[in-house]
Image (cartoon, rainbow, N blue to C red; front, top):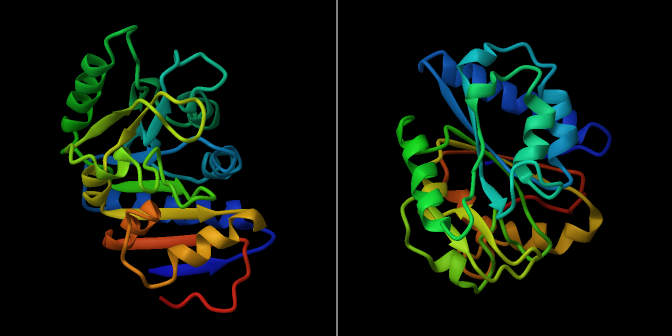
Length: 229
């Protein structure tokens, strides 16, 4: 794991690392699967990432988690992703989670089938850590973090509104080859401290699952005394 503290250019440096990882994977693969979240951090990161010179035609983008809303809804995570990358990523390479009314489980299986066409995992996973240590829609001491599903899950009672969501499962997260974690804002200092405290209990802090991913890069504007774990 490498932790980068950067106060002024956090999002630019994060995007630069994502671009480096995409280039690295494309040197040995035909396509790269990039898993992206929603949230406040994603827009500035994608603004910088879209300016990175890459073979974008070989990049496929899937969501990490999504609210159970239409993709054109203002709260859609995919909407943020599409706004940030549609200028460089082919439309057919941007893969939204499309939920059919009262057919969430069917929609989930259909999304699984899409990512299975690309070996069923994210090459590069990008996530942020919530104030409570959640990641994606996997929450501390919640059924979501204990779900043993291989791919995606439906979350019926998310502690963070809206209550109904879909998310990658813990098992799917662990199949990622590389992960970029962003922790921004002093109000997340406790979450970052817990993430780095050396206690392996991910049930209390789901973000700790990322520590098991082969390549892990953490970018933060929170200045701790030590980043050792």
